[in-house]
Image (cartoon, rainbow over all chains, first blue to last red; front, side, top):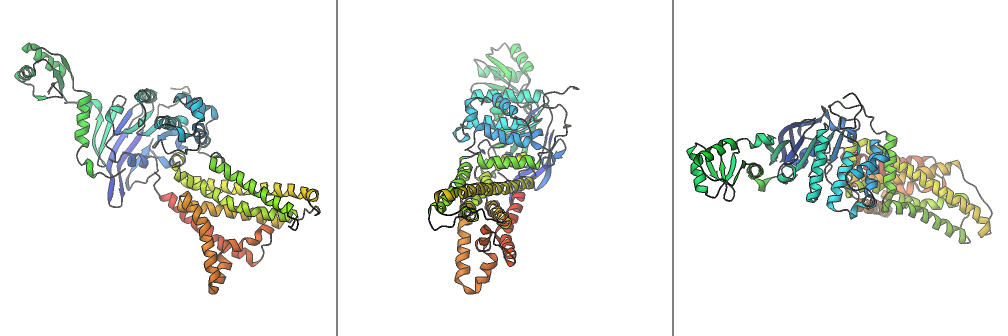
Length: 299
Length: 261
């Protein structure tokens, strides 16, 4: 359980994070979304004790991170995959962490296998790793202590589509076994498939939060047909407000069932009918974070 | 779930996991000092330089040739390289940005810093042990390769002061590292500042006493032979306060308070 409560972080006169509150429950994946410089990293650094909040608190299972007896055994953290000594091998990086955590060497091999770095890549210097391999190594380090909470900053950065798919499965499985996952991203599509809950931050403030369904509720239905004008008229006749959707589609302000019934009643041909999904979320994300993108503080 | 499950645990209640012991942290820091190319080569350089020094003493006809002499002279290169190792033990965490990992694994930063100080101290002791071994081998070889006789003469004072000397040198490096958090800056200033200090206090005669009490190179000079006594100890104390305690204390506080990113 992660609780962030009225967290504010100021650097001199600059406010990086302002009154941010949200919580993540066990068994869920929370996506922490926002454009670059919105305050995601500052929030996460405050959560894991690398930065001291100006006011407010951030706790894990009711305790401040610094008060956890063996933090790495309870919380797996990946804040910056490139923050590794370029002269050490992947295995050496994990061996050092394993010594601090008090987990045995076999666990190092286990997580190396888990993230797909077993064998030859484990013996290569991190300086020769691609960004994707560093992310995998960072994930391995986060998983090393067998924690029940994961805090990951932009973990999909540098991963190829296959790697992103793999990571989703890994995080989903972790949450399904009762773990708590908080991961940040500036790209919605990287995490919308895996997150149960979304927290959108913009300019240091929470712009929206809730489950995907909640955030999308009232986003309407997308319909498409050979004659857009006929569709508009049929829906309006049934008392459903319409707006032009992406490309030649129509966005109807009603549930798919009501829209289908209205269109069927009017005898209009359809080629597509579905809840306004992905692009609805994308649009929401852009509308929530788009304003003031120019004057945000660097994270 | 009553059986022990492979984590993650379902509940928030975490089992009591012991924090990493200081011994674990010291072992980790020691490993960090030799698991990179820079660290490994610095350690090799200490051994090679000590070997070179005794080789010169052995083969130069009128050089002194007792165990005490070998031990004393090998402290010069050791005392030059150990501080760099001490500096890198701290600054590499910042230049390579591993401080983020280090301090998320151990959020109580003073524990990490304490472990670094202890690891550096241990490295200095091991460095002295290496010079003792090299000096002993040279002593055994002395009657073989030169006309001088076997001379094992040394004193408890020499051994003790040599250890203390190297512990001071490596910790001055650690202190400079903590204060500056940058490898090139700390290394350059470590070598330049004392030299400038020596020149300035040497030029102005009114400042001569400052040199006597605060110039670490001068105050610790008798220690390699075990010749420190009386007022000398006080002078070592004051110069250590300036070059070791002060930078380390300021750097320590800064690391504890700063944001790691």
